Length: 57
Image 1 (cartoon, one colour):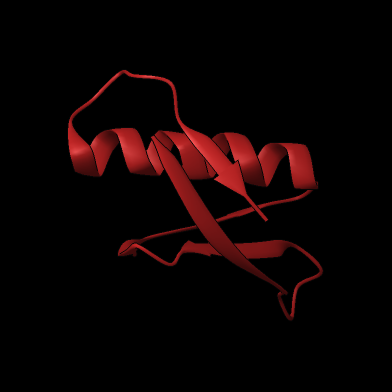
Image 2: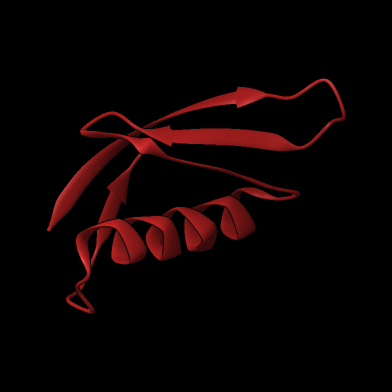
């Protein structure tokens, strides 16, 4: 499954990301790698799948 994320710098210095195809999938991470992992977790929770998730930034 492929998804596209929009990423912004938060006021606290963390990165904030949202999946364009699933607006409820929004999370943050201190690094880009952390953010991508958190976005994958969010997509898996929302979709109920454990399939491979690919995030395009």
